Image 1: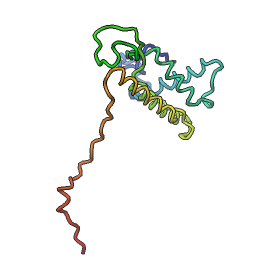
Image 2: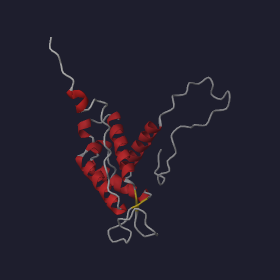
Image 3: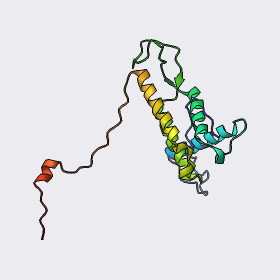
Image 4: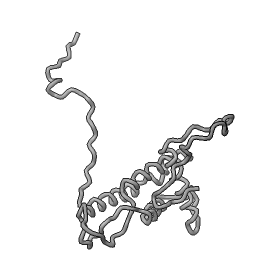
Length: 181
């Protein structure tokens, strides 16, 4: 069972070699990737979160509001200082001193978490059209978190530009003509 331990989760499986001869006659399953292990832990954690609600929420009854509550719940385990509007360090990328502003989950961590849970939902039998992790309200919440954290740090968020495919530029193709036969 997974617990949220202030972001310090132990990777699933062991990378330690087994002693010679120990379990040599048993076939061990292939080691899971870090992503798959994390996705499994996240899914278990979310399921546990739903079970701990009063009253407990069945996964089949889970909706975007439960997901939003889960994301807000996770903020208590965050490590990212998010300055409030009234803080003298609001908008400063590298504040010169400490303040009492809250620690929260970083936007990138929440974004990656939602991606893993969205995939896990469908891998565990959920239909894409009922996936609460794919809800528009989740995307809006993540955008608001991203923008507010960027403002609090004084660093505007810039979307990474996609690399263009290595096509010839217009100058190179302008001299190219198609000959008809």
